[in-house]
Image 1 (tube, rainbow, N blue to C red):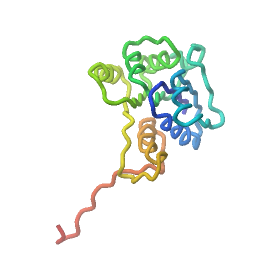
Image 2 (image 1 turned 45 degrees about the horizontal axis):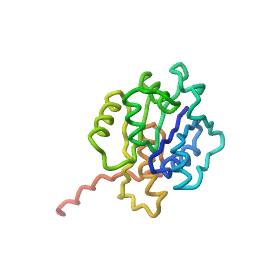
Image 3 (image 1 turned 30 degrees about the vertical axis):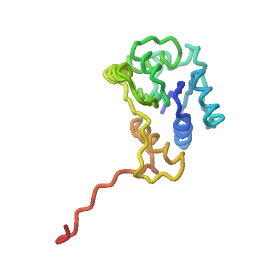
Length: 190
């Protein structure tokens, strides 16, 4: 797959790092854009990203990246983590930097755009912006980890969100913990 990954200034750098880890195990073309605040948060939270070989980095101010145009074919874009400010600017269609322009392109071309907000609590403006981007075609997947997989460390916990992102992209996540259906009780046992 041809994918665009982006991060903005919300906490949750571990989610992007884990997504990069899982994507490195497949044959994907990965383009990466980090906002200046994302770089600052990454530094504060995990020091630095470990990038798989072949990742193509783009500056946030550049508009020469292929995915800034609808004529370039890409399969999906993930903004993880996304600040609510970024969600608001996508909802308003401002397109003033590469992340926002790419999100606009993915929406107008009806391509998969997954936005992973990490902020809480939300105010009414946040909720309305989420509705706006959802109505425009984005998939909003809040960074809400699950616990039924019994995560043993932060990577395991972050993976519960990353698995959902991979599901939305249509990329196999063979180690994903799936909710199991209850087995029917044996006859006579209820």
